[in-house]
Length: 198
Image (cartoon, rainbow, N blue to C red):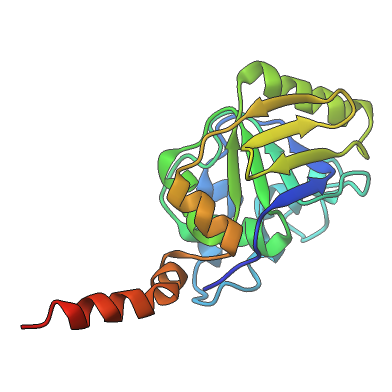
């Protein structure tokens, strides 16, 4: 399934300054029955966003109207726990296109890259600066440059590089998942197949 092309993203951010957020908190298991990648955003962080009577938890950042944007800034060890693609589906469906943390669980990170959410791992100290920047002014914006692999705090012009494989970088730039990548190469694959026939 193709997703939005990612080149340069300028956006404010939503802070979730909590460490060790697992995938069951991102999307509780009872919401995993659907097979299409739509509607999951409504239940992103469901048990933290809503009380048992379905009223909003006003103190939770996603319920606070001062926080907007396509960047989720999370605490260390984000996406730990069980392996479920639905966690990233929920993040994407809610509207986030990037998640910033100082550490991601490997499977969660790979799921992000497969689904179109850019996981940006920064140092602990730089993550703290980002949180402080949002705390100073929730409208402050950040720039993510995929080509240069840089995350920039625009008000201070401070930058930090992030890692991404060349293959996943190319896919995200083109809005491809693994299947789209192969489909895009079908002519070359066919030509090679025809050339090597006995």
